[in-house]
Image (cartoon, rainbow, N blue to C red; front, side):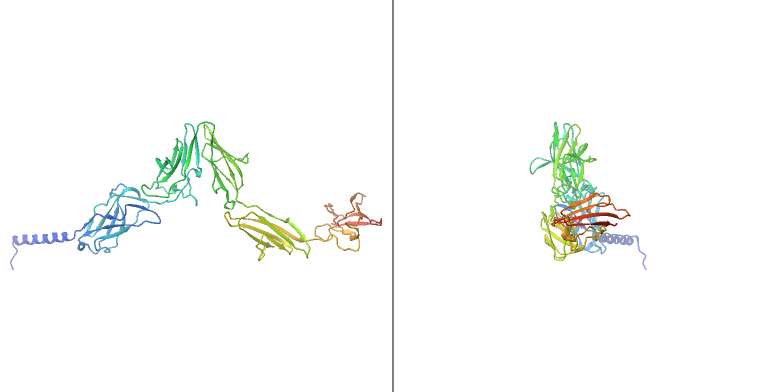
Length: 487
């Protein structure tokens, strides 16, 4: 066997290098600049899907383990701290051109983002895309400033501070709950135009005008904006202080207390119907009443005042019977309620149970017991009013008795509580009835006796008391005797 010479060894080395270079050349790919399927990306919880298309070559250079990734720059287009926003599964993309979908991170906010495409096997990186505006609108609904009070005033040479309301609630999704957000204040310059004033969550106003604030989503349109507030300068005297009810006016008391808010100042004093409300010295006052509420606001070198006629949507109603009623077994009682409720519903109860079929404003009661009628308004302000009344069996004040009793027990048990005498001596017979104490003091003298003595508490002790009666008929016939009153 011939030993290789130095020349053959050199030739072998050259060939090996050519093979390696050839393999390396075959394993390289070129990725084109990604083409955006959008002009700006305005993402939100309801929409956050965007597409980009790119080409690469040669397709045969991709290894089976290759993954394509989308990198996004910072808001200034710098990839020094790029964010990977999407990565394909290994070997899932093998043909060119390719289209990938991605979503924006919730912290995205800027006008000059870019993306680029990277491959993992072989390693390659595309050029960066054209710049685009991108924002994730984490809060995209109207919010309130100035406690929804539409006006404000400042003293000459001073200022009025406008601020975004916080915390948020079911009626006010405050953007202050999202620390990543920034804000821009504007002053109206016309019915549909405005001018930028300043950045930040608050604005110190020193010029009269109407102001509002928007969450800063750049060129993206958004519903994240505030109510308008008109600010005026109080040159002398007293400025106007608008009062706003949190539940509106009229308001529904079924929703709880309404909060009355006024313009901001140094100190406050609230009044109701012209009378001072003790300890009501804050910018807000809660109430569930109707009436004329007013406020005095100390602005420093000047003051402001305002009032509101607060109206409750609680409807009016009445019932035609008293709380306690009597009737006999043969009688009935027609009970009627009247109301100003809108589309009212009526529910009647007897002894705590619903009376089936009783759904009208009137009800004919034929049974003794405890009744309740409930009036409910379900349109607009949902609220209800209940009336309670009872019906008891009426006592027969003039029962047929044969003899004049000489014993009663007025203890409230409806049995022998009063002195019941034969009807020939009672009201309508022109009979005089005199009752005297055992000391001869007249306690009753009448020609119209109603079987109702004693009407008042006799302050009985453990000793039974004895009274005396004289009954004189119209034809001068007399009956005399005693009445023992037992405890």
